[in-house]
Image (cartoon, rainbow, N blue to C red; front, side, top):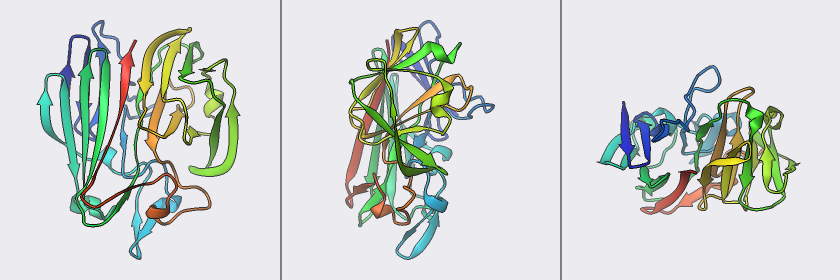
Length: 283
């Protein structure tokens, strides 16, 4: 099941499974979101909750009980309820259930809010802690943007001219080894060798927007001022790029087991609400 929203410039479709954005088109019917072809990657733009990345052994402990929680959490696979629909906006909700309690013993309500404003799609995350104790969580975006033609025709323009150090992954976990991305001014020219060791993971990145360019011409901008961390990823030979604003990331190779002590974790007070947003602007 999908829900469609539109305005004078754009049309977006969202799947109820995972409340996942699966299409964003302009008035010329140009598609900006990856098709989800499983030959490369069968997703479009999943939400990552209640963790981002991978836990060591896909498990953690809480109150002396061990829980299993797979990569990027469970929200992306679950059915959300459409709780509000306007012509240019839609709000989806996922609440605690016996199924989620088996993997994550906290009382939450997760809202994804999609709103079209002019040539931008704004995606908001609201996390409600409905319990009487603190709740640890991470949340992140994973939109894949369609890049037809030669992958090396594309580049990413970072908002700021900065030295970009990224963390290398080891068995899906954050290692203590970093490498430096060499930019042409503030541009990263894309090639598949960049992703030979999986995603590029940036902690506390200064640039809060990235513009995708094709042959030096900008056509899409992702802005994520709320988010401290970032991932960039594509699999080998795939015609898309993922620009992923995050709160948190995988376990580090030497620290794991307790979500409250996890690097990059958010701790939400009892009966409190977390809110963040990012935007996709068609240029």
